Image (cartoon, rainbow, N blue to C red; front, side, top):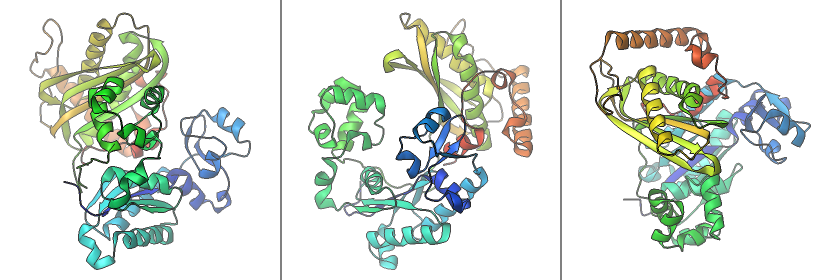
Length: 418
């Protein structure tokens, strides 16, 4: 059950990557900065004021902001400062749940007798991060994780917002629905079509009516969050229950062949992370987005866990084949997502899944599969020594998958160990 007092903090470093670049190069301070080149990976608040945003093409960003300065990115510094940020938080409480390189939750219930009220702790945290790391951080303080995260977004940039239990509804009601955790452009558009623009309007909708608009699971979740019903507790050191990645494809033909290179790329990233953590997964899931934001998902649970790139990619492509066969009127794919869940400690023998002639049946690991694992292990070793770009599968290396630098993506991805 959620805490009865506002004792959960959500701390979020402001425009983290761009702020680090401004920290490393003082001449960039106060100037519009973008990390990247061909694609904007991150933008400073000065750049955002001109409409520059992450994911935007570099030429478009320059047209919006002619004085924009591009920085190539100091990935080792991002990692170092992100880790030091976490260590500062742990000085106040051991109950820290890191959810990305630049943000985390803290439960300070057991720390108030040492450091003062949650608001005092939040102020102390902000002061230390600014003094010791040289970075701005926004903090939200509330009774639930969801509300604390919303509060930190309202506090940006470089601010603090405390939401006491007796004014939660008053605080939430006028805010835009886009601040709710998990509401993306597609869901926001569906809600807007129903005349729902604020969290208060969302909370007023009957749950079943909302589910009819956005789906059963999403509707139930959004209804609860809009009413600030969030029983999740801060979990320090928790292990991830799934590992996933997705990639936009522009507009490609709705065929397995058109998706193959993207799936191979995603499987390579996911399998590498699984092996690094000594983990493997039993459930392979795929999500395909067609035109007009329509998505379908398919999943299969194996009897044995897998962690080799080819086992994951082959299973995913078979699932995509099934999904496309069941949606014959769709002509184009715009996005593919892939995830592996039901994670376990990695077994010594990997198994592969043949769909034909009987989907769902496993055959024992073969000599070929043993060779696949040996190949993956060798590539892992070479990448550790010489960098991820040193070696890879030819189909991916020679393909046209549009993606951000691997170092940047690695910082943003969660490893399975938590």
